[in-house]
Length: 127
Image 1 (tube, one colour):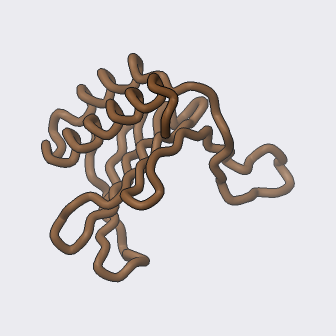
Image 2 (tube, helix red, strand yellow):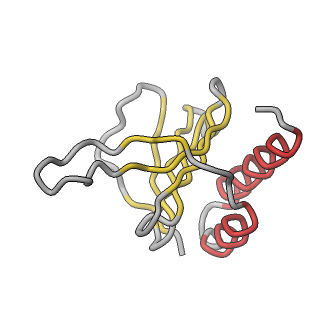
């Protein structure tokens, strides 16, 4: 089950960043001062082959693999997003629905709704 972790600071004024985590997901949301979600990043399969589906109200959608920067034992680099293949909605959506059952329903429903919107855009070939 996803549980909220407390962040010590927010880097943007008038924006609240929230972080929810379990063994499979990391969900980061950014909400404005009226609690509307302005963007999110849903990282999944975080302990194996971490990928992220992201949405931003200005930039739209993205789907990426997370390169953790740990390729060399001699140099640690900052994790970055790199291009990845198709998004596995049939795996991620049901798993997120189960994991988010105890979360704020407004947030989990918003994320699911946006993921479905992304999948439909991919099927239509638009972005």
